[in-house]
Length: 428
Length: 195
Image (cartoon, rainbow over all chains, first blue to last red; front, top):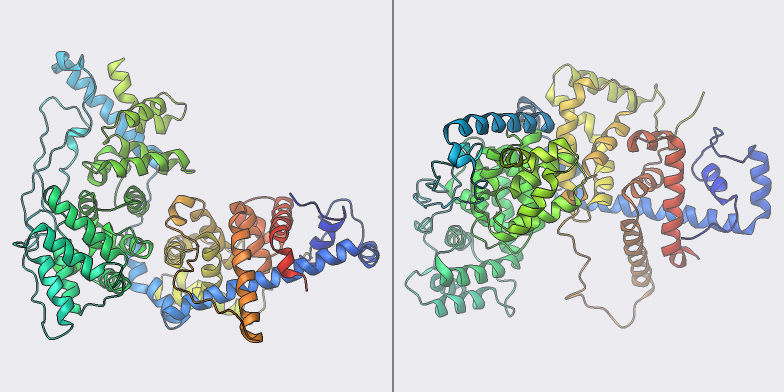
């Protein structure tokens, strides 16, 4: 650590730079004595000059950054209008019902305990068995995106499964067969690109041909290809369902990697998400497809846009959760889900309980639970740790089970409940 | 009477305007929120950028701050300046760094043409950019409280008492955060600041 050149430098800076003249500086009496010292002390003079330059440079940098940010919207007023339009704020305020996470979790825990006690009387044999197996969900895709963006899945819930898992709604999956009603691509512009796109979206084309088309469209040689709007739309509709089978996964993973680095496509998605944000009522199918793809790319600006969409349209929580079940996102999916959940709890639209955790986290890929476990280790706020613990209840990874067991025996009552103390109480 | 740099005198025109919009806002007029917040938006953005290098996350943080402020405005009693109160909300939200600081990468030099020689103006600009990059990096290494305290002091001109209000600590602690932060940052960039 850098030590000041003189023991009085801090006082000199506090008084001369920060205007701290009300006597809070310790060991220093009177401004005249300070002035005398400063006149004679070269070290303090130098530090004062440097500190003044530093403060000026910080102010200049901050001013530039804020101005650049506002300029992206045209002006500060335009940015303000976008961030806090009156009708939007009114809608936000109408949902104010901030709940105490502690109370909610305790309530959920007590309900679970009561349920377990009741079930124990009926199913004494079942009560003696091990705790319910985690992640027993096996969704079946039933609906196509033409009718709804995501398909509800039947859950293989066994009859002896204890609450609160029994109350969890089935996790939604994007149907593999969804979104086949693609818009027709206009063939009048960029014929080479459109031909590649047609090859990529052609379900009859071979895996090799589709992969090659993706490479030619978004590979290193042509990272900035800009497709026309209709082609972007067709591409989004092709990407939205995710993948079917290992071969489909290879193609889709390559395509997602490709579009992730394509700035025009990312900007197009961002515009679509902003459109959803501004939409009242049902979201058009094209924009739902954009939401599915935007959730998967792991681009910071799209993540921020997705969160804003969910604040405005919480009914699409399941859409985003379903998008991430396809395991096409490289990293950060768990963080996005945790953030979205936190936002909706804060607005009183969701709760901190196992059922809500299931909505977001049931049947997610292993990488999601790894994100959550990492978040649990570093989260500073208790509500976030509680959400991490509730989410990890849906992981089947033994390491996460051990992590939960440790927390369940920990000192924090709320977090212990979220980690499943009731299970331990029942099994002990 | 103590003078706090961060608190505005009660008779300033800006303060009168703020009180006017605040009263309307608290009376339930949502249209008054934008004019009330307009003078503080740049400051909020700048502080958010100190907590999230990615501008989109900074914008998200500011938006969330505005939503929380809108909700809590009816209960705002004016014990502190509105600006200080807004900063406090933002700093509280930003206290979960995982939320607002992820997905960040340093500036990439890929595809940037670096000329062999620079003219005088370009050289000055390049040095200024270099200083800003070093400053950003040094600020990144501070603790959240130190970073916030130095930003509020150097950029916003808040005094120790107002900074303490934002950070929810004593004025003495705020003073310590400012001085310590300045010392650390100077230690990393002083060669760029010396004439």
